[in-house]
View 1 (cartoon, rainbow, N blue to C red):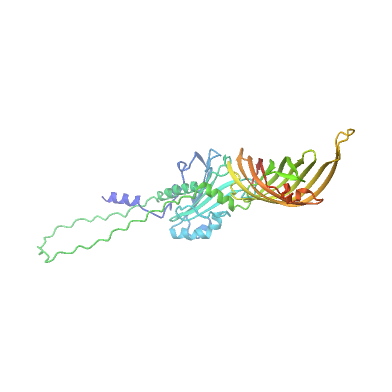
View 2 (cartoon, one colour):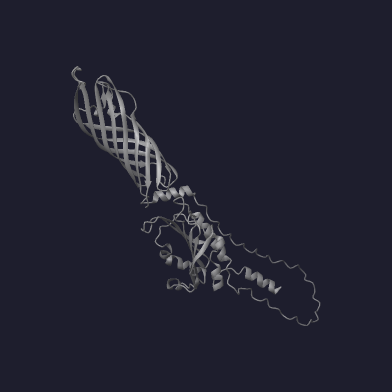
Length: 444
């Protein structure tokens, strides 16, 4: 019976955990805890601590490094660190004092997953270290009673998408570390031996009269049940998290595009009482992403109007256009819509070719009277694009939209007129356009 009680006591010894060499080694993650086949590529777990932790009573410190065999997996490299203290209070006092070192200069995640106690999470996304290499990493720091844990997890450099590692994946590893620690009890912990006394010789017992009143039973207080460990909170969703991370980024991935479209004015127009026809119109543009919501582009516009056999008008514009992206979705998504509000200004160049005089049999064509003009003005509109990423660095984006130009010109060029013959002038017409952009994405 005494041996049974001693075994039960050892199985539920409780904290402090990992306070000797064998149990300390057992607090670390094992190969079966990782999401893909991995090799241990480094082991620095030992007794003893650095001076900063030793002043709080730290007895064991170390790190084990796991690297997945597949460099395209989400959980590619795991740095698994431990600090063991004699009590939970000592571990709790150590964490805020060492937090600058624990965080490694990374910005925090606003809502870290609940793993263990005193949980903090930090992240690195993009070229955080300024070495020209884009990384996705999460740093999870928490405490399990007297043990402080740090899990630094990096995404594989050959991942097919820019970001496949999520906080929830790192939290799942953290929960496995909690289970490893609580199973790592120091050896030699056992219940105190149950004293066994030798029976004394029996003595004659005098008869005792029965009590006159029943003895009331003393109520026994129920043993309070321990509070269950809170389960990790669910993440708010991978896509919404990626969008919010992208909006908070001050230096988005460099993105440039070139594009071209066909353009045409809505409605019918006249000039000097004669029907005016639009022969052709197109736009060519080049632009770049400066901020998650801000694009800039330079655009060349050309359209030709004609009164058949009487007059031809050529309009060319060079414009600087600012685009505000209402949706602002990460440009590394495989398919993403974009809704852009456009506002621009620029210079206009007009040419008017009028056919004058009667046809002369000795001349092949009538005389042409040419007039030129220069203008200044602006443009307002919007367009919708569907960006389709073909490779990690290259995408195609069909798009369409509407614009409204407003320019003033010299030399009474008719494209400046708000109204011609009581009707809206062709130079102030709403225009639709449809075309294709080719995008190129660089690194941060």
